[in-house]
Amino acid sequence: MPDNMGLQIRLGLDILNLCSLAKCQWLRNITKLNKRCYTGGNRVKLRKTLEGQEMSGQEFAVTQLPAVWAKVQTQRLSGELQLGNSRQQWSLFFLGGRLLFATGGEHRYRRWQRLTAQFAPQLQAVQGVPELAWEYEILSQAVDVGQITQEQAQQVIRGAVTEVLFGLAQAVTLAQMGVGQVRGYWDKEARLRGELVLLVTSEEWHRVEQLWHQWQEVGLRATSPDMAPQFHEKRRLEQRVNAQTFLTLSRLCDGQHSFWDLAVATGAQLPLVGRSLLALVREGYFRLQDLADVSPVMPVALESVPKPVVACVDDSPACLQNVVAALGEQFDLVTLEDPLRGLGTLIKTRPDVIFLDWLFPQVNGLEVCSLLRKSPILKDTPIVLLTANGGILDRARARLAGASEVMEKPATPEQLRAAVQRYLATA
Image 1 (tube, rainbow, N blue to C red):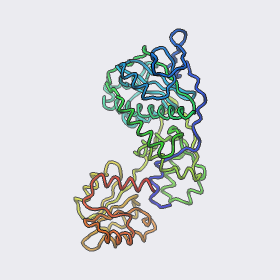
Image 2 (image 1 turned 90 degrees about the horizontal axis):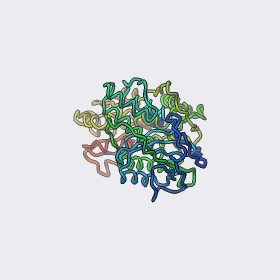
Image 3 (image 1 turned 30 degrees about the vertical axis):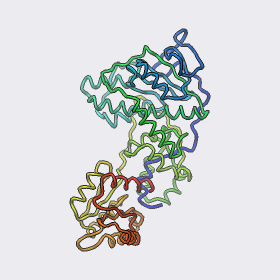
Image 4 (image 1 turned 30 degrees about the horizontal axis):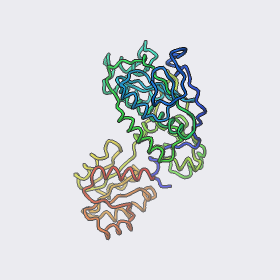
């Protein structure tokens, strides 16, 4: 396994055990926090699907979440859509047919602490918050007193909506396969304040649906992103990867970080997180386990994970600036104008991907590439040669010198980012 796999291996987890969803029995107390009981005439128990039925006051089976959303949107309903199976419960709050907020799931507190740490770290505890969607009320109060901006609150809301809808999409898909059942109940009396004014449209559902499809394509349909990796063959993996990679994996794969936690910690998309370690899980290096929610008073300390390192060696300041503009926010960059003087820096920083110019005043990129391949540390590092002439002969020469690929100059930001992500994903 090449050295440069390290920083990307940490991006991913997978789950060997299918989510076991038993036959659904709707819980009267939809969540421990809400503590509201629906009894008597306020709840008509009907074993029917949503289509053709009035929503208010009825329990219904949820087989197509978009159909439920469309019904709420068409009728411009306001209230709370409670959804659940035998394992989890969720609440979606609507105003005039548009989604205002979403909460629930297995990691309600963990999600809250993760999102506020990411988008609103200055947020302080607020006293006297009602139980109904307390996250939304805390955000509203924090905006009112100037603790956080409205934009920060909306970022937290978007993150919560994404995670809740993803969990719902997975539960409904598994129910369609005969694994468990999702049921819903509409409470028209439950209302939230609308001061934050981030009304999520059905487009958000389509975006989450795409994320869910990507997750399935990776092979993780029955894998919950709320689960966490735990070392199973630690010594065997230590012999297979370099020390830096092993240290990173030891910090992250401790059974205390979920897929969602790792996606935030690494800045990677959730499907990439899942895909990156799938092979290692299948080979038995890790086991994946259920992860309990955190205590309301115990913060989640997500460790700061170094960004992947990308090096660019080019005597043109304009080319270096182009790479910085394209990759600077996502990666730690090492820029060098002199390839010979910079060899020590490359060995010291161990970049995950190297962009190397073809021509230099005193040496050519092919010679530099061959030299890098002689280093035990850089022998497997992806090297992309940048050239204004990418003919067949030049590409063949580049391959013989050890280059991973040839990219024509000037490369667009999209091409640069795509190349880095491609090599990180296959590390």
